[in-house]
Image (cartoon, rainbow, N blue to C red):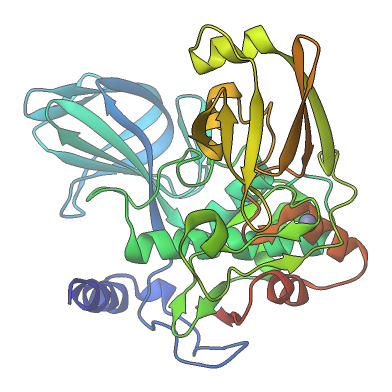
Length: 374
Ligand SMILES: [Zn+2]
């Protein structure tokens, strides 16, 4: 019911308040009938709980009723007051202000952001939200998640993944009443438009509005750097069966520098990281395709906890063997990441062999469709 209400609210808001952004008729690549009425705006919480921040640009200031209440030119400091927001030397008795620049993106703390900057006052602190078109957001994130030199079909694949992730979070799992996504690894790393380049913009434009769906909803998608040869099912890794996240053989990620890896670690260093006096033996308990838990001197630790303690960029994946070598332990592993969903080096390998982004996504994600949402 909540979702329905939200969707109908968005529809009314969209149709009457933002007619400029009205959709084309649903132009679906597969099947039909995906959540019409979805507005393609996202709200990213770029900073929360701050007392002040710097803003730069030529922008109009609007209150929550969309009334123009002032403007800024150049650099100003925005700060929280008891019951108001101070912009430069001017005090606004408001709990929300919006800064809109028509032409040049605003600079927040020295970084450029497309779209609008909204500021909310809560408990005498500020929540800073960048509200922008999903397409502009995707342009900003794909080079944080993909290697800039990958072929354009790999970037298109990443663009559809990033867009689907954002749409899913906005519809089903927004972070707070003020914003849909965090700008960190909690969601996707987003830092404004500083990371955009020609191929990322091309990849986003070429896939405009395309979203991965399961049934009539955006799919919850997962990707990781390198599977090392085997994609694992979500049933094995997270004990939750998802139809599109199944086990499969991936022959495409061999160019990844982490396709195979080795780490030689001192037992004393491992002990320090695990917070124990010493480590005499380490062995692994495997599930169907990957390590499920690590046994250290008889004590079982879930593999992800072990990786977190020793270091996610030391023990690169959850697929490894371990052998004792004098005062050291040698970890020999395959791939990087959790191994579920799309293998990113695999998608780059498939793209290099001439596969397009639809073929790539359908290879990794079983039973999905790719539809144009707007
Ligand atoms: Zn792979």
